[in-house]
Amino acid sequence: MDNLKTKINTHYSSIAQKALNNGSDTFPVLSCGSVKTIENLNPGETILDLGSGPGREVLLAAQKVGPTGKAYGLDISLDMLKLANHNREKLNITNATFLQGEMEDIPLPDNSVDVVISNCVINLSLDKTRTISEISRVLKPKGRIQITDKVTLNPLPQQARKDPELWCDCVGGAITIDEYRQILEQIGFINIEIEVEHQQGCCGDQALDAFIYAEKS
Ligand SMILES: C[S@@+](CC[C@H](N)C(=O)[O-])C[C@H]1O[C@@H](n2cnc3c(N)ncnc32)[C@H](O)[C@@H]1O
Image (cartoon, rainbow, N blue to C red; front, side):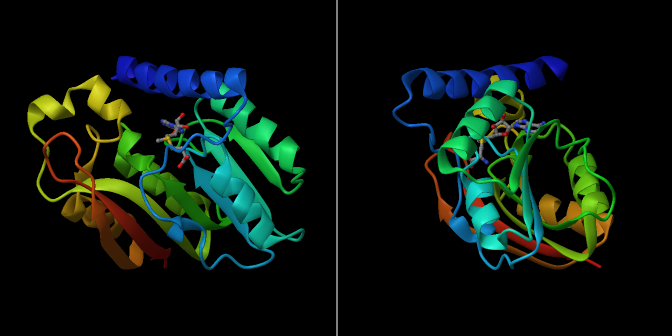
């Protein structure tokens, strides 16, 4: 499993290196869902984006929460953090901070975040229960999640779930809508809504984009 994590890290690091070296497009599109993740953010709120990549959503969120708010991005890849900081400096945004770390072990205190956002990342977690438990830990009471992610209607075939390339493409690690809901319920989230957005023609199976909303009780 650690090999898989290293492969995922290397895959996204090389995308970030290319973007930084070529410089023309420093916001490569890696997301799989809509911009709903950054809707309904309020001035003064603290936002955390898991797997923030080039930082697009963190920087938009930072603008929405304004000078009294704060947006954090968390990413495992040092190269992605370099790219995100490059973008932050280019746009001169001062209330955004990019942290290095893993979504399974979030480097923020308990009850410190109003909204956890994430776009096309939780499917990459090798321990989704732990990731969602970490999300719950850092959220304030009544905090919310606004996430887009890949999901499936039926479990992926065993072969697909073992394919590192498919994991890097955000498909191999996708779980079913029912599994997603079960984990959220098990961790104690309430008002859970999982809305399938549109189907992508990936890997011949039902790898769908979904928007996931839930609240910490
Ligand atoms: C598909 S990209 C999405 C990037 C960004 N959310 C976007 O929409 O542009 C996945 C990102 O998650 C990061 N990532 C992968 N595994 C991670 C982990 N365990 N913890 C934190 N970040 C991770 C990758 O480095 C990459 O930047």
